[in-house]
Length: 262
Length: 262
DNA sequence: CAGCACGTTCGCCACAGGTGAACGGATAAA
DNA sequence: TTTATCCGTTCACCTGTGGCGAACGTGCTG
Image (cartoon, rainbow over all chains, first blue to last red; front, side, top):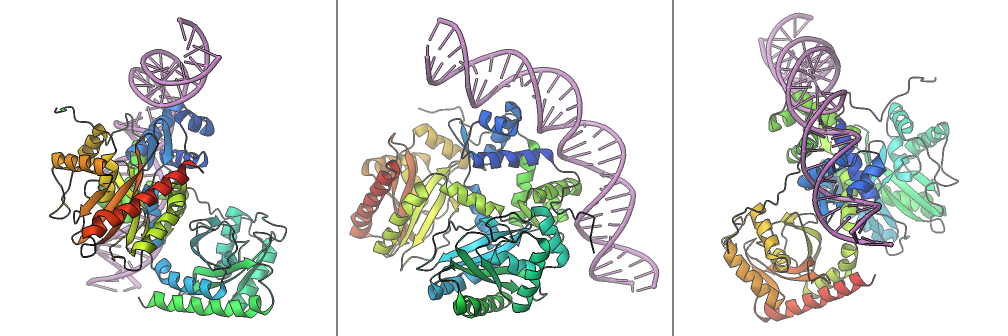
C-alpha cells in the first residue's frame, strides 16, 4: 500500500516570521564559524552586511550572543536554557542514578536518549571504567534509524510516525552496516517490538555495538530509551544477547516506576 | 570625580529587529510558564494570539521549541548550543580537573565563573564530600557585587567597566550583609586587588561564605574566577584567611599555565 | 600616505509581520 | 443531544519595520 502523499513533517509554519528564521541562521553560523564578525556571517549567509549587523546587535542586546571586540560569539545564556530544557520533566533526574549504576556494573558507556523533531537527543551519557572513548556528549543529536536507542524508540511509535521521521531525515549511510532500506528497518522494528530489545551492530560507528531498551509510558508510547555501548569485542554472545538486555530492562523498569510515582 | 554621563551598558541595538526581540520574549515566557499554549503566552505578553501563534510555529519549525498537543515547550536544541558555548574556549576543559581536585582536598563546593553581560555565569560547580547543599548548577547567573567570584572579577576590571556593570544591574540586596553602596564596593575591590583574594561573608546567601581568586590573562584582565563555598561554621580563621586562598591561588595558577600552553 | 577591509550609519521602499475578526474543533455544561 | 465556551488556527488588511545598498569612518598594512 503506497502512500503517495508525501507526509511533510519538517512542517513549515503557515506564516513564518522570517526575521526569526534568519536570526537563528545567524546564530548557527556563529556556531559553525566558532565566532565571527559581521562580514564573515554576511558572506556565509549571502545577506547584506547591514542586515546581519542588525541581527547580531539585536541578539547581543538580548544577551544571547556576546561581542568581543568586533567578533560575535554564541553566549552562555543557552547553557542555562539547555539545562532547563533537560530538567523540565523528571526523566533526567530519575534516570541518572540508574544509568550510573549500570555504568558501574557493566563498565561500559551508558546512554539516555529521547526523541525530538524526529531525531534522537542524548540527555545523559555515563562512562563506566572500561568505556569506549567515542565522542559522547549530552545534547548530541543522532539519526534514529542507525542507533539501537533510536530503533527502540521507533519500534514503539506508530507506523505513520515512523514514516514521518524517515521522510524528514531519510536514512543516511553512516557505516557499511547502516540499514538504509525502509522495509528492512520496519522488519527490524517488528522484531524489536516483539523482543523488547534493540541492537546496533556497528551501524553508526564501525567497531561499536549497542543494546537498547525503551522506557514506555502508560499509553505504550516511548518516552525515552537507555542503552549500553561498547566495542564489538566485548559486545557479543550471551553478554550481548541476554545479560545486558536483562540489566537494561530492569533499569528501565525502575526508571518507569520512579517516574510514575514521584 | 563624578561622571554624570550615564554609561548605558544594557546597550540597545541602533536598529533592533523587533520580531527577534519578541521571539525571545516568547521563548522566555515558555520557560517561565514551564510550557504553555498560544493563549497563555499571548496573555502573558499582551500580544494578539495570532502573532504569538506565528512566533511559536516559527520557533517550532526551527526546532528550538517542541509542540506536544497544543502546548509548546523549550526544546533540547539549546542543550547542545549551551554545551557548545561552554566549551568554545578551553577554559572549562582546562579548569575542570583542577576544580575536582580542589573539591577533593577541601570537601566543599568549588566553582568556576566567568563574566558575561555584566553578570556572573557559573561554568562548572563541583561538590566535595561535605559540600553544602545550596542550589548550584552550571549556567546559573548571579550578580557580581554580592559574590566573592564576582568581586574577584570586578577587582581586575577597569573602573569604567565596574561603573557600567553597576549602572546596568544595580546592587540589589540579597542578604542583610550584601554591599549596596558603590563606594564601599570599590574600597573592597581595591583591597581585593592588593591582596589577590576576594571574600563573600554571607553576602549572597545567609550562612554561606566563599573565597575566590581570579584567573588573569596576560593583559591583566580577568578571564574567570574560581572559588570555594562553605557554611560559615567551617569558613573562618586560618582556613578561610590563608589555607583556602593558597589552594585557590595555586589552582588558578595551574589553570592559567595550562591555558596559555595548550 | 594611500589602499583596503571591516564595522557602522543612513534613508528609502516594499513587503513582511502585526493585528483583529472570523472560523472550526474539542471539551464541558445544560 | 444540544448549547456554550474556550482554544488553536486561518484570513485579509494595512502599516511599520526590517531588508537593502550606498556612504561613512576607522584601524590596519604595505
